[in-house]
Image 1: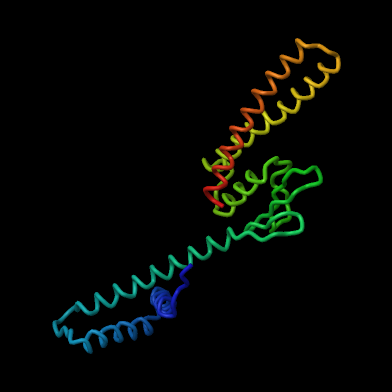
Image 2: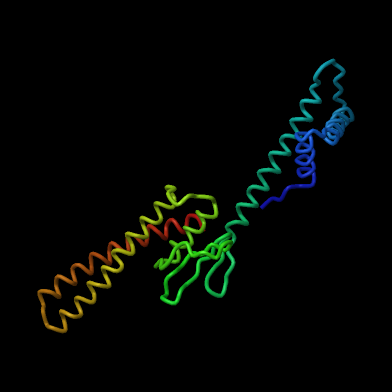
Length: 208
């Protein structure tokens, strides 16, 4: 990540001071830009706004925009940096923690409130925290997509567990008809859960 140079920071500072009414530093920087132009042999002696003045201000604005972009990128990167914790991982302002049931909770580090509970997949929890850190709202398309995919996964995942249990009970009773039904339902639920899980992992891989 490229950090703002001293020149970028100075340009930003001077421009902000000018916007607040103190144009001293900005005038000094413009004068410096003019001197550089003069030293290079480019001298404009016409009346009114000079090309050198325009060029100097253009350079300052370019430096300001560059510094602003660098700062914004660095803030975004910092907000999404992951740090391991005893219970899981901290991602910016939120934490993904594995609970006693083996599922994942999402906690707001600022208020210590638990925002989401009992999420089956770590990938889902991580994607949600990334979107929350970037300022996405709960009803945003990004969060709606990951939560819908997760709901689909969990439905078929728990259905598969139920059908597997039904198969075991039917087998114990030697009820072959019920065994066939339970096995078919289990196979379908397992396949659907796998498809939803792959979709979630694809989203996770694209933003991690």
